[in-house]
Image (cartoon, rainbow, N blue to C red; front, side, top):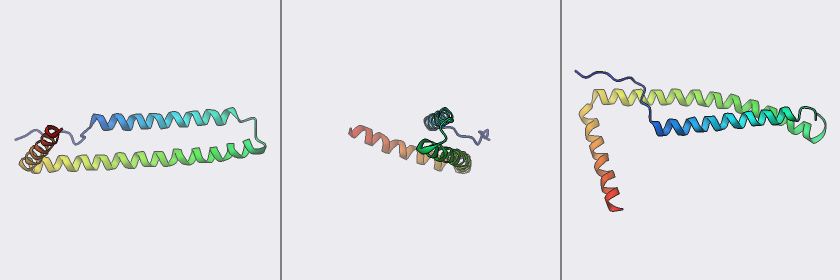
Length: 112
């Protein structure tokens, strides 16, 4: 009888890249908000129209980013759970696939 592992499978490379991307996007949003606030006194003319358009775009981008982040997180969890269930149902097939992939990767590395 094997112990069941948690359904959450984490890949460090993917989480670092996505965390960095999220952090960069949030920093960009904060900088854009600071720039918009800095131009608050200039409501007339071209700067005023650009400022109002930037506020609308920033608001829309925040909402879209939040929705996409939640959706992608949910999809990643479903895929990880499915992979975990497959491995638990078919352990020897999973070992065979892993061994085959390891062999192929080894052959490609050896050719270099």
